[in-house]
Length: 431
RNA sequence: UCCGGCGUAGCUCAAUAGGCAGAGCGGGUGGCUGUUAACCACUAGGUUGGGGGUUCGAGUCCCUCCGCCGGAGCCA
Image (cartoon, rainbow, N blue to C red; front, side, top):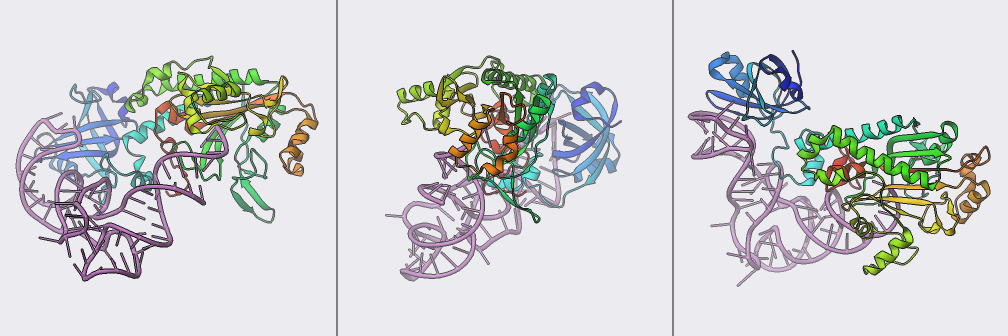
């Protein structure tokens, strides 16, 4: 019977079949050890010359790192083994034995080398744990929305030249139509969809042609955006803190073993629950000035400033009410102070940076047109977006969550590139 | 784009002040062992990223190109 390594404890005393790859192997004249991995875990297979046919033992000796194989054997409880069980082989069937060394065979390869071999690097234990955590984050996101009666609406990847900023777009030739662009955001489309369905979300890749190369940036990254009709600023904040807390809790409940394997400090994640602390932009600037930062009201925060703000809190912190001129054209002005807008950035703890950008959107047609002019944007490109304000316009709010930054924070990664299976960075699109 | 750094064996690195290119790991062969980053012996493995220059002599100094890494700006 074919079973997976993670389930072996249920089969103690029974005969099973394992299918997988050689993680490590050692052999001598009398005994061979095969550490077999199958994507769910690693188990040691013992092959004793004295108790198997000669062919089986010879097969075991031929194996090298990353050989694929089928093992039939008996599951035994073994306190000396890390997983508590071992398999004593009765049959070893090699499927394919490499003709050359596996390129990744020790812990101290350079990052350049590892990235060149990303397709093989994924087989290492650390990457496996991270990908399980990524999977849990994505499942947690979907489950949160489904439990809260949101509708998943998938937004296009080819778009016209509209979005958060007209620069930084990847240009594509679209047959005879001319230029189209890879989506930086699905927000404008979600605004359309929320007027149809009320509560909507998307989840998928987005693209920024920004020449950013830091530990927090990818050129292609996944974003989860949500948009809710009739939600105003305060409702939006609550939605965000509930979502982020839910994701963390979901990962703790479903992928804790992988967090432990990465030596993540779980106690810091256990504190993540609503409500999150809030600070206005203006308060943040005053606080930073007191600490000696060279920042004026109206400037946006850099990485150091964000980290300083985050250091004050154990939970993610909302920074709200940014200056209108520092933010996108579509944000609703604060009725109490038209120089600032009803928006927030959510900054993750421990220096992981901004994981959410959010705002209440302008729902008044005339005000939106005024803003487009103020930002020197081509009004004709926004015809359909303006239509949304002509037909039953209502206040609405939404946000975008950076999936890889969220993963990097939860998993405690030093660099965002490990949070996605095949990262696209400034100088790397291969493999 | 700007600032900074790196590039030497399959991998990770060393090489005093410009003076014989080395080690560990990995590979191969043999041995040995309830091993798990195994161990022991032997062994193979090099256009020092490319090009140019200075010098009696360049891995080392200079110029240039390429590749990558870190950061800034911008953002999630």
